[in-house]
Amino acid sequence: MPSGGHNVVSVLEHKRRGTFRSDRHEPRQLRLRRLKASATKEIAQSWPPAHLTGVSAREIAAGTGAEYIQFISDHCRVTMDSVAARAGEPLVLRRWQQELVLRLFARRDGRLRHRQALIGMGRKNGKSVLIAGIGLADLILGPRGGEIYSCAAEKEQARIVFGTARRMVGLDSWLGDRLKLYRDFIENTETGSIYRVLSAEAYSKEGLNPHRVIVDEVHALPDRELWDVMSLAQGSRPDPLMIGITTPGVMTDVRGQDSLCYSLYQYGCQVASGEVDDPRFMFAWWEPANPESDYRLESTWMEGNPGYGDLNDPEDFKDKALRTPEAEFRTKRCAQWSPTSAAWLPWGSWDACLESRPIPDGAEVMLGFDGSVNNDSTALVAIQLGEKPHIQLVECWERPASAGDSWRVPIIPVEDAIRAACRRWQVREILCDPYRWERTIQVLSADGLPMVEFPQNAERMVPATQRFYEAVLNRQLSHSGDPRLARHIGNVVLRIDQRGGRIYKESRASGRKIDSAVAAVMAHLRACAPQPAVFAAAWR
Image (cartoon, rainbow, N blue to C red; front, side, top):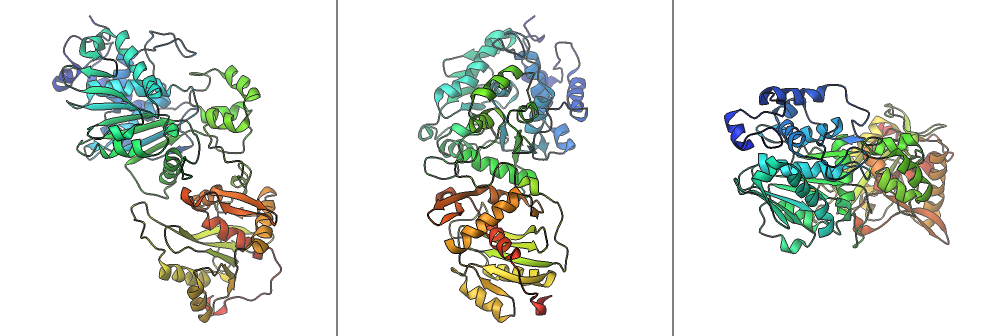
């Protein structure tokens, strides 16, 4: 009997007949229930990752992830000697890998829950082997006439996953009987499905009709052209899925904009935190919970590597930590986005100031307002006065992803939000840069609100930047943990000239927003200065 324990009837035919069985001749439905049930059992330390989008147990149970797990367990083998196993041994998916597969192929209302997925972790955690197995499973379990593509920035990188899949076919006679191997693609001769390898020359990818796209090392893509071309090519497929799996890389691309991978990472963090509602996007990312944690500690390595000590060698981490620059080691081995050399706040210092509480109604506050007009963001920040000022993001207006370049900040709602804040708290001052917001300052001042012009020149922003920096490092302030404010703080760099250092946006082309950070810095400076007890009495 061929390897894998199946007769010559294809898996697809077995699925139609309901007779698909495992090596141990366990009835298919029984084994599927057992594999799905494993998601509810105790999970190893590798799960969950630091960032994870939600999927319900019902959606996992309705999905086909268990079939993919079963297929990989039955037919995929280790292709080279490694820490985890010897070449030729059956590929044993770890529980964290099973969790990923179950979530990838979860279903809602009969359709795949997700259309895009980004999975991130440190190097040498079995990424290529896992997605090669998924690609082969798609050849057998997927639709007739399916098209699976293994993509990467360079063809040689794309061949790593594809080559792994090719070798798996050679190691399993059951697969060998059904799949025909070519130099750049594998064909299922019964269903007409193909599994091809492609690189980033996106101009040549028009006309493809993929139902599954696997992108290895997303961080290496020079721009988003390949990603967008392959994503848009899936429009006629009923259950398309694009899977990106990667380590971190550079934050900006050759044009000075946020790199594709970093943009997807930030978007995934927003979805995972609930800031953005996008049930079609799956995000799983392993990284240290505390970005400032010592990169030389084993506890830090474990958080960024779900296969630590299992799929990779702890001794190699110890060796590389001694000989690799910190930023590079954090990026490739801890799965952390390493900030640029001009980064403002030290790693983890902002998180260390977290106090998850709102500013109570009626408290004395300063308001900081930093506004734009179009295609940027506008933010309103409150700082509770006291020995240890507490920061809360009141509102942040950012251009929605679906909006075009003509999007403009909604000025009337912005003004209404400032008025509402003055009714909620005792507002001592409202700091605002008058540039392009003179009308709002005049209107609100006429209403009796304590508007204070705060031009963002070097004379004001240099001391404001320094005061805020020292307060964060010495934990002399706290914040409520809003992910939007954290994102803006993380996007800030320090611009230094003969007048001193002040916060700055790294590149206007990058699209990174910093407005709530600017508003917080402005308001904090005034919150720390002696002020008379004058409030917007009419608005309390």
